[in-house]
Image 1: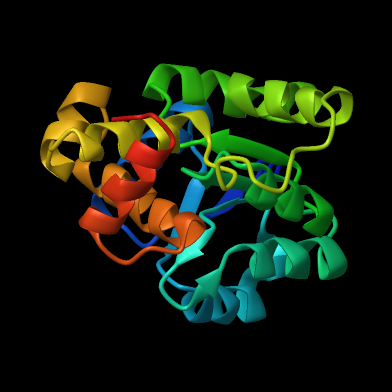
Image 2: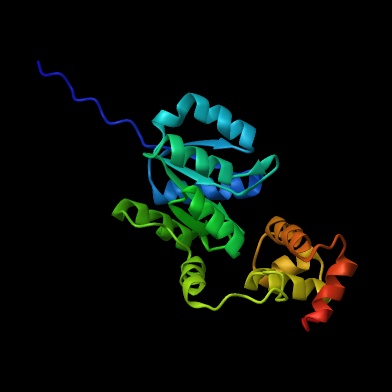
Length: 221
């Protein structure tokens, strides 16, 4: 009697995302992109590092948010690139500015996708991994190309706001709430709230009134 051949274990992924709604949505995207994949989740740097302490050697893929409650996901990218080169660290974030993008690439990220993409598009970008291609949102690919052909920015430019951040700032300056801006842009309110936090940091402001003044100064309102 022949001995049955054991099936290969499913590939394993770690999804690092602190927002429950976004985490559930990303779980669906990953399950669609890679049927049968085994997905573990972590909502913080501490939880992600604890998981990696036990299971890093079993991983195939790590999908990493950058804005975590206890630090930046770039720390996880750096840890995987240095200690576990067989694991693919892919950033999935709302940050589409040069600072976050190039910090992640320099740390060892093997792909960079934006979470405000439609689910079907995000599935397609991630499936490029199967062909040995880096998953990149189109706007990120264009930003990378533009970085090498554009002249250096002036020191007094718009604080490095991305096009999406500029859109959000414009809507807030026109009096829309976060929820109203989210509906206008077709995004989740928590996504827009994350953009607002980044805008405040870049503009060095701490209130809607100050942000509105900066928007007016830039001719956005």
